Length: 131
Image (tube, rainbow, N blue to C red; front, side, top):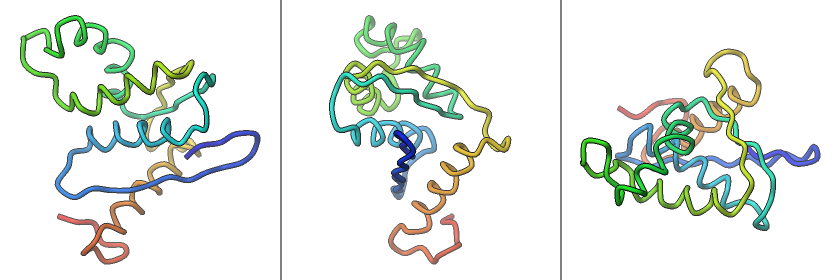
């Protein structure tokens, strides 16, 4: 969900055969891709410690080690991390963590949109979560 001067734009989607971490990364990537021009000062709110720790802490070390973890294993979701890194560099991003399922209106809306994305995947019935 993007908000600017009182205007709200809702984005959502889903993928079959994926992980929560990939979807958390994809959500932030799609939001940054939706911005009309580079160089904006923006605030990103997420309940994903994975996304926030990755972008704020782990990413510089991964890049310095040629996309390897501290245990010299390939970084999981490297393709998405590289996309997010590129988009993050195009803007002045301030990253914020919010506790999930705690009554935060923006976070509750994000969960609603995520569930809509899952429900609308081909082969899913409305209101039925895939196995």
